[in-house]
Amino acid sequence: MSYLLDLECVRCGARFPADRPQTVCPQDGGCLFARYDLAAVKRQVGPEVLARDATRPRSMWRYRELMPSDQPVSLGEGLTPLLPARRLGRALGGENLWLKDEGLNPTASFKARGLSCAVTMLRQFGVRAVAIPTAGNAGSALAAYAAAAGLEAHIYAPADVPKSNLAEYRYYGAHVTLVNGLISDCGRQVQQAVKEKGWFDVSTMKEPFRVEGKKTMGLEVVEQLGWRVPDVIFYPTGGGVGLIGMWKAFEEMEQLGWIGTERPRMVAVQAAGCAPVVRAFAAGASRATAWENAATVAAGLRVPKPYADDLILEILRKSNGTAVAVSEDEVRQAVRDLARTEGVFAAPEAAAAVAGARQLYAGGWLRPKETVVLYLTGGGLKYLEELGLPA
Image 1 (cartoon, rainbow, N blue to C red):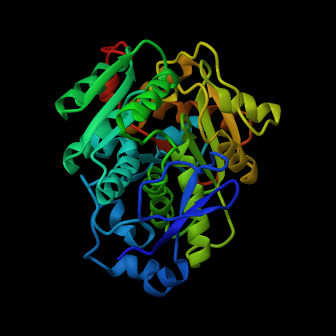
Image 2: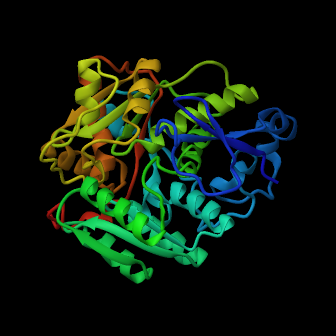
């Protein structure tokens, strides 16, 4: 059974039913968060149950009491490994560095988590056609899960989207529109198409369930560390759903008694060629402004202005975290360093986390003995052309 109660606007607190498709709060445009009967969940499950229950799915759906449905559309997403990065850690100056390898998800990125959950709920609600603006991997994940669920998928991507992503869209049977511009331009076209054709928009933070899939990254890392919260989490930040989802997971775990009040310092990593969150954080602003002429090899970080920028900035400050920008050269070098020291060939977006950690170890913001987790959000094999490989 699901313990889902309703949906709550994070800005005004208004409540909405969770038994039908919802987008954002009609009163103020705030994002809607799924709320659960956590008192009932606490009576049913805890760390000891998770440890001994061998019947649970070998996927993110093992946390079913904290998920919105018990009938998932799943391709085996989640439960990605948490790898000790000893050689890389020594090179950067850290003694307790870990890699959460999200490239081992279906469609080779963390986007599988959010789209599995969103498609699950939309199928349950009887939605037939969905649309998404994407910089690359979100479109791949939507196309795959829509195919598995029997939904019609419409994907709007920049004309220079990585060719591997484009091939995935088409092989999964999605309808593809290439746009001369950035993901923000794709988003405007999706909004118009949704109005005209009645499709459901699954844009980042404009529906409530992608964040529920992404929050499982926080549940997993705490369980994998023996129900301890890491000191610092690095998160490559485009739309920021994973960062927001993990923070939500920590709040839920505290209410369940699984952890205490401790929280990681959250670090948003962006590309220097598109760093709206970094700029807003440095300026002390509560909202970001759109980045002009965004450009980076890390396609997933080429988001001129995240929809939930206010939530991202609030989390960074509440956690005593920070935001850093990394150059194209630093990203490319980090791809090589990660592969050569730890045997992980990561996407440029993922490698940005390594470059960010290098900066913060060198500057003393990170202490050598702290438990630091880098989220490697995708695999590198999709980016051979963008990286200029072979190299």
